[in-house]
Length: 55
Image 1 (cartoon, helix red, strand yellow):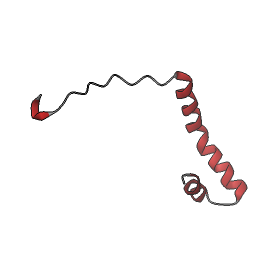
Image 2: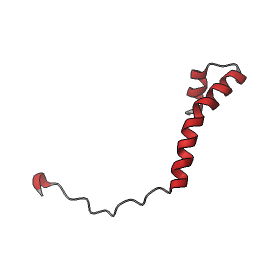
Image 3: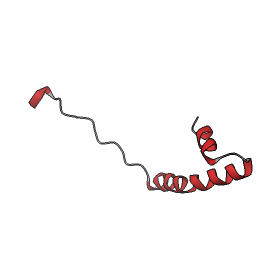
């Protein structure tokens, strides 16, 4: 116990299921395409649309 640190005794976090990780990866890959398409169809800049969607 150097420097008064307490060891972390929490159990390890459960792994995220592979299907959820895959879904997140696909969503991250599709997001720029969706933003570009939405900006073009909406007639706004992609940057402006990105700012709006993060609210």
